[in-house]
Length: 320
Image (tube, rainbow, N blue to C red; front, side, top):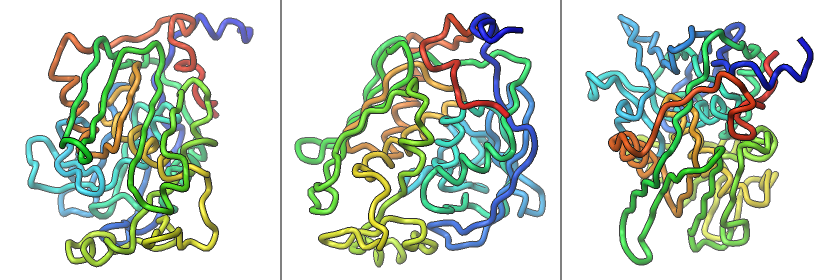
């Protein structure tokens, strides 16, 4: 087959060629955790498996499985929302979105995905080191057909997030913290998935936290594994990490990274435009649920010929 024929073949689902492992700590729990990423058959989606329990529990990733959005995205089984959970799934899911991974088993030995370096870059490396397998099944996309928006608060406290029709996939985010260190950086970023530059432009953006919040968080059992090795730490005036920022607009780029992970909870890559102002995990999940609650707002599509797909959706990161 010559290279030119690739535009006339189906866009396939993707999984891994082999398994890969990582060990780290949970940023909130502080617990040591082992993570094993394994290939999964077409149509599986992304499924977390708590293998530390007396009887392993599978938790498929769906918008309805999201059971907590304080400080991170947490999932539980839909039929057992108070049961076993997995916290802080958004960075791994962002990497899956960036590389077009549809089907994956995630074996985990604790209730939180390891934070690693605080970004999605380590997960991108893990996934690519395992090799990306093209599967013999059409990739299914969630296409936004009409605008859906969710809002919270009023005036200075207003936050909102929106999905709108767009022939491709792009995300825009604006932050507003009224903090000298954050105000000195870029406040708004728009990322078009068709650029093919997720790994370069988004994946390395780290999570961030404020010293003023540390005592409150730790009193709630959160942030116990956080350190300058995996979090951008900001006091009342400046960034405390000796190496500084990876991007001039790293704070808002991390919000894009999180949003990509939270949108990938839908179980299918999006065709549409995501825009948010001061949003976060809670609004992102509300937005997905609002979209899926309106059958006229979306459709599930696949492309038998890559040439029929919006620009960039067929040209994902190389599979090797």
